[in-house]
Image (cartoon, rainbow, N blue to C red; front, side):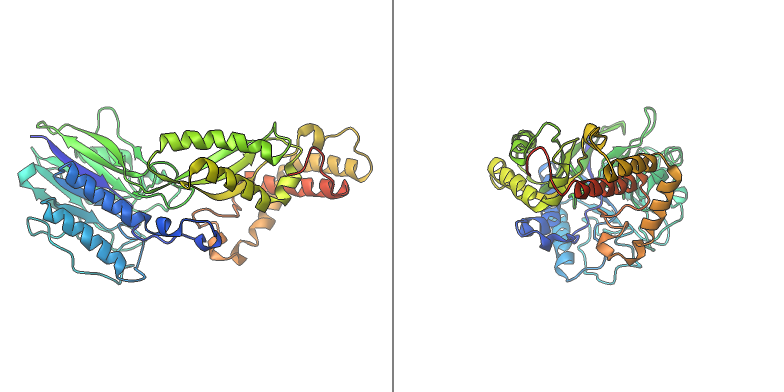
Length: 433
């Protein structure tokens, strides 16, 4: 008997899109509705593929709802699955922990009249006799769950395909908060056939060659540039000997990409546009059905460095025009970041004299002084508590990375470059941006 099980996680239904209103050209409606559309795509995939079970490993929601339409979107999805005879089992993660959610709606029951959500007080096992599957799992009661929940999961049931459903920051291998910590070996030692994990938004398999798959499917829909590429779920196929394999299925509506554009050889902004066009065409071919949101990082050593930094709005407009031409309204430019530097021969020019030469000597000594860099990092960190929440280091895409020494070094280099620019009288050789 072959069985199919759909494993998804981190849907973050109606997750807020931060700072979206600042972009006049943003496809606001498409982005705001992306998580709901991705959930609808999941339901369609489950029905079309005739899966036997859907499991969601936490963070179905993104916290308490602003209105009941968020809850109704899930009720509708659950009802469609139940009507198709497909049971669904869900655990709460840190974003939809019982302690955080104050809103709720009555949900449909599974075809066997069982509840969709697994309980919070201790792990439980749901046995689906008709398909020979046992699901072991536990919902978060507290948002900041710091206990190892996996060690309390029950033993596997012989002759059934045993799934461990868990929301965890496995071994701390994450940029996310470390919730419900456990190790890979602890999961392997449980003796389950498959671990359906959630919490990490990047698709990963921590299984070993002789152990069970330990799978993060990633989130269902990327929400910002820190979650790039295709997003979706996996479908597990289980044979009559309880051996399994799985395959990824993309379900996202909007797909995020970072484009690094080396502009070292460009003498003007117009010369950068063909380089961008080439990368956009490749992305459009590789992602033929998706709306693309791109961030462009201009890199390389160029005489245009200062003028690019001073005319970001103009540069963005030029890049956006290329996105419109190449993308036929399928590409939205989220942001342009100038991460170029002045050519080494320019920063160490032999014709520097007087203040410029003194600044160059001081700058060279600063770059080689680790103690000074630590002082700079400490001084910059002092303003962290004064920043608005959306700019803080805890945000998804922080503007200020105080604990990152490389970022602090970039700040120092930018300051030196700015001083050189001013001492040169504000002129910029090598063409205008």
